[in-house]
Every structure is written in C-alpha cells, then in structure tokens.
View 1 (cartoon, rainbow over the protein chains, first blue to last red):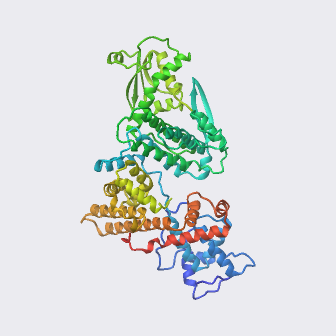
View 2: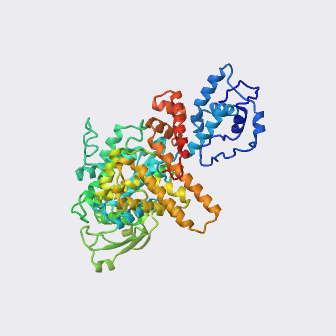
View 3: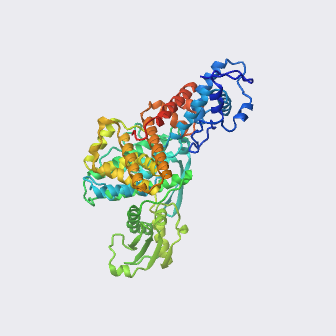
Length: 428
Length: 181
C-alpha cells in the first residue's frame, strides 16, 4: 500500500513510486457517459504523460493528518467514479490519485465498473419488436388463454408508455402538460403535469376495471369527493385535487397505473377466447388503448421524446372505433344546433383513412343507427381522405378541424360537419 | 435498471406460461426483453441478429417454460444464460470455418464482454437493495451525494460508502470465466 505524503515535495518511496506514478497518469476523469472509457491495458512501458504528471503540484488540504486525508479521499472514490461528488472534491481526489497507487488502482477498477451499469430498459428497443416476438411465440405454441384482439392494443400501448416513463428522471414527471379537447365546437385546455396525466389514465382505466369486476382504485376513497363517481372528468379532477402540483412524489401513480393495465389485460384473456363477447367491453378496451396512446403522446411532447403511432393492426382498430362513433356525434351536433349543412334523409359520406391503420368507412349522416347499403355507399354526397394518425388526433382533440389537411370532394358544409363531429368525440 | 424478481414471482410466471397465458408472455417480454436484447447485441454487435436471437429466446421459453428450475436460481439469471448461449451459437455459426484469426479474436472479445455484462447484471440484481438504489440514483437520475443523502435520509458519508461498496462488488464481474454463465 502507498503511504500518502504531505506535499508539495515528494520523496521517492520504493514501495510506492512505480505503481503510483504509473497509474495516476492513466486514470481518466469520470465523465457523464462511461461507454467511452478505455480499459487500461498498458501494463508495460512508461505511460505517456508520466513526466507531466510529476510536475503537477499536489494539493492537499492544509493542516490535515495525511492518513485521515487518505481515508477521506478513498471513501470518495465511488462517488468520484460516478461523477457524484462536488467539483472541489473531484479535484482533490484527482490530485490524490497522482500520489497514491492504491487509490489509483481502485479508481481504475471502479471506473470500469461504472461502465457495466446498464439501464434495465432501453428506449431504443423498437416497439414493433414486441409485437413480432409475441406473434412468433404464439405461432409456435398457440396460447390456451390468448389476449383477445380487442385487448391487444391496450396491452401494447401500456407497455410502450411504461418504457417511456421508465426512461424519465423524477423531475421530468413534474413537466407541465396541456390536455386539449372540444366541448361542442369550443376548444378546451387544462394544464397538469406528466404525473397528472398518468393519474388521469389510472382514473379512466378504473371505470373499465370496475366493469370487468376488478377493484376501482377510486372506489374506497375516504373523505368522499374522490369517490367512485361515474363521470370520467369528475373522477380525474377529484384525483388531481388530492395531490396538488407540484407533487412531492410525482412517480406515485406509475406502478398502480401499470398494475391496473396488466390486470385489465389478464381479465380480458380470462374471459376465454370468444372473439367478440356481447356488450361494450371490446370498445371499452379500445377506448382505453386510444387514451393511453394519445396521452403518451402528450407526455412525450412535453418532455421532447419521439413517440410513434401504434402498431398497424392496432391503429386500424382505434381508427375503426372513432369512425363507428362518428354518426352519433354528427347527430349530437345537429341536435345542439351546431351543424352547418341542412338536414336531409339517407345521405352518406365516404371516409377514406390512409396509412397502416387506414381503410374505408361509409358514415350515415342523417340517421346514426342506419346501416349503409352498397347503393348508398356509391351515392356518397362527399368523400373525405385523411391520414390515420391525423384522423385519430382530430378525434382526440389534439388538432382542430381547421388544421386537418384532408383531401375532400363534395359538399364543403358536410365535410366541415363531419370533421367537427370527429373533434367533438374528444373528452378530457 | 435491474429489479430483482422475487422467487414467488418467478414461480408464478412459470406456472402462467405453462398454462398458456399470452398475457404472461407479454409481461415476461416487458420485464426481460432489454436484458436479452442487450446481451445479444453485445455478443453479435448487430441489431438484426440481436432481434432474431431475442425472438428465439422468448420462443424457447414460451415453448418449454418447465426448463426453468426455480430451485436453481432466479429466472433473470436463467434467461440471461439462454440469451448468452444462443447469441454465442449464432456468432459461431455466422463465423463458420472461414473466419480469419483477427475475426476470431474480435468474436472472442465480444463474447467476453457480453459475459462480463451478464455477470454484472446479475451482481446488480443480487446486491443489497440500498447499494443498488444508491447506484441507480447517481447513475440514472444524476443525483450527487448530497441530493442522494437528503433523499434517502442518510449522511453523505453513508451515501459515499454505498456507492463505493456497490462499485466494488460490480468490479468483480470480469473475474469470471468467459463461459462461466
């Protein structure tokens, strides 16, 4: 072991000199990224810069016992290797490494160890790989309890958002996020934080949880006003009131949200492999997948991460959900006196959605419950074409009817009404 | 960063996989895909090949979950071992008999680095939670000793001790045989 000597003068010490000076010159400074650390492999020969190192004056704190200084600096080596000590401490450690072979040895080892620390998830893992891996597995051994197609988008979207959240530092959870939707034709905006968005998802998913017989996380709130109302917006607002911004523990909603999405997917699978069970359940799952994707996009925008659209077959189901809700929304706007085109009977609009999630939908304009016949489809009074992601963003209130770049033919008032009806599907 | 899965989680997972629950397969993927992909990527140095090995590893587990023996160790270690083995097989198959000495040396170095990484991953999951937490806070959340001490309610000296001890444990990762997994 090397005995530290009080500087600035150095007396060569046969037990320490070689090791100390050899190592000091090749202990690199810790940096933020550690991948660039080069393993010190030069055991032989004088290291370059050894002479320079010898001319650096050694700084030690004044009036300190050298041995306790050595112990103090040695205790800092882990923090130093992780760049977690103050600049002054780092300077003192580095000066000490010039002089102490034992610490210099350990410093090299600990710096190499830092390079071995890997994050559990990497955001760069392509989300499409998940779908491919799972499909590949299921092709080789069919599931006894498959995830129904209508629950698969929620499964995939929750996993994608989870990976995004996993990559965020705690203070990023406090980043402000603006949620947008339309109330009638008026645009609404409400500010919250990333954590607030996750809370919003948790609270919305809770209604579906209740519908499949799982516990609703908002059900047994003591004190009442967070209680299990049925209005989704009221539930979210109640939950936000419980945890005012800025939050002390912004990550608190993360695990409950994730566990609940897992439980929902399991519950869907446990219902057996009936392709479309009666009732609203499939649409309930698709609706929550839609919300998960759109809100993940809000979060990603807020923290400036890239975030792509859902997998093609999933996106197709989400587009279809919004398209199927259009006739009801058109009728609602007409009842509210918001429609610009005069009413008529039996008209149809042809909605063409482009992209991996795209397709053709023939939407009845005058009778929401009507099935559209082939003849009526051919006689569509207007044709609107827009991109799959754009259509979903419109239906989510993320973009306005004016911002939609759509190719349209036919009655402009009808097209305007249909785009506004899509935007009116959005909620908090 | 690595979270240890408790033995009970491991056993439940095996049972659910045997039962043929697709939702369990998805959870397994979410928990271990980056571990598997990371090991394959280190061995093979190629994205496409790493994705292929990832598909192969999960297919093997899904087809024969009973291959996991909870008595023999954590599921994470078993999966890391599978990933390593399949990746090395693929590397050898890709090199074939035609590889030059330099190519072989490169491949051996890649295999060694992947073994070290897999070993390091195991050490992190197996170390006492306070040490792991200290490393995570500084490495991934960029907290310095003072912030960490405040947050955990410990002294700065204790924060420093945990970091040093954690890294000392981790630094033993390359002291194992390359095929030792």
